[in-house]
Image (cartoon, rainbow over the protein chains, first blue to last red):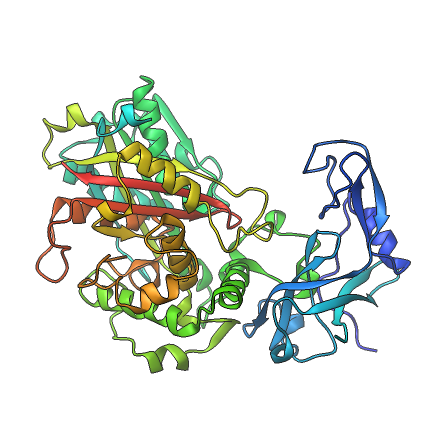
Length: 137
Length: 389
C-alpha cells in the first residue's frame, strides 16, 4: 500500500471526541441538553441557545447533499491523481452540515438533495474519515 | 443614521499601477494614496486618519502605511473583514470624523498577489498558498481535498442553479459584460474580447466555475480620501457625497442556513437604502463585488434589483452592460480590470459620479452609485451608496 500523503486531520481538544467516535465507526455530534439541537464543528456552547450543557450524541449518519463542486484544479499534490473529484456539503438529517466526499459514484452522477449515508474510511490508526455514499432510493 | 446622509464626502480617489506590477503591497498602496491625495489637492500634512487593509499576513498594517506617509495619526487601524473591509474603512472614517477623532482620513487597500504567486517564475502557485499556514483549517475540510474560496463560492453557484434553474450561460453573461467594459478602460488588465465560446473553452477550475468565472490574480491598490462635506467645498475636486452605508455579516457561516444563496447584501442593502432615503430604482450604476460571476447575480437579487431566483434572466437581458438598465462594474470589475478586493469598485463608483470619463466609458447622467463589498470567510458584507454633489 502506498504511503498516505493527503492532509491528515489534526484534532483539537474540542474535536477529539468526534475523531474518537469515528474510529469506532460512529458519527458523533454535540447535542444540546436544553434545546436538543445538534451542531458542527464542535464548540463550547450550543450556537442556538448558548447552553453549556450538551452531550456527544451518535447521529443517524444519514442526510442529503446540500451542494457539491467538482475540483479540476490541483490545490494539493496528493490530489493530482484524483481530479476531477467532488467535494460536497452534506446536511445530516439531524441538521448539521459538513464537508465530505461522496464515494462510489462519479462526480457527474451527483445532484443536490441526493440522499446519502456515512461510509467510514480509516486512514491512520487514529483517524477515520467520514465519507458518504448515495442511498438507494 | 440618516442624520449622517450627505454629511461626509469622498474628495479624492487614486489607483496604483495594476496587473503584473512587481511592487510589494505597501508600495502599491502608497502609490494609490499619493494619487488620491494629489487628486484631492491635499498632502500628508492634512491627513490625520488612516484606515487600511493589506494582505492577511502583514501585521500592524496601518502603522506601516502611516509610517511611509509620514503621518502621526489621531485615528488609524487595520481591518479584518476580507473584501468587505474596503467599504467598512469608509464607514469607520465617517464614524471617526463624526466622533471628533479625525478630520481627514485616507482609506485604502493594496495587494501583491500576482507577484507573490509568481515569485519563482513559471505558471505560479495558487492564491490559497499565500494564506499563512496558521490560518488554514487543520480538520473538517482539507482531508477531503477542499481548499479555498473558489469552491466555497462554487457551492453557492451550484445550489442556486439547482433551486432557481440558473445556468452557466447566466454566469457567462456577467463575465462578457464586464469584459466589454474592460476594453473601454485603458487601465484594465484584460485587453481581449470574450465570446461565449471563449467562456466555455476556458478550463474548469472548480465546477461549476471555469477560469472566466474567477476574478483576476493581480497586483494593485486603490485609495480614497474622506472628509466632511463642509470641508470638501473648499477643496480642489467636486466631492462625491456619502449618502448611505451599512454592513451585515452572515457570521454563522457560509454553509449555514441559506447564506450561500442569500448574502449579507439583503440586510446591509436595506439599511443603506434607508439611510440614503433611496431604493433600487434610484440607482444609476452599481459596482458589485465580483470575486466570482455568481456573486454578482446573487447580490443583485439580494439588493432588490430583481427578485430572488431571477438574477439569471436579469443578467442575460443585458442589464449590466454600459447601454443596459443598470450599468455594472463599468471599469471591468475584478473579473476583467484587476482584483483589489473591492477598493477599485469604490474608486470607479466615485469617478462615475464625478463624471470624469468620456463617451462610452461614462454612465450618462450618473447621480447615484451603489457599491458592494463581500468577503472574509464568504460571510462579511458591506454596502455604500454614493451620490453626485
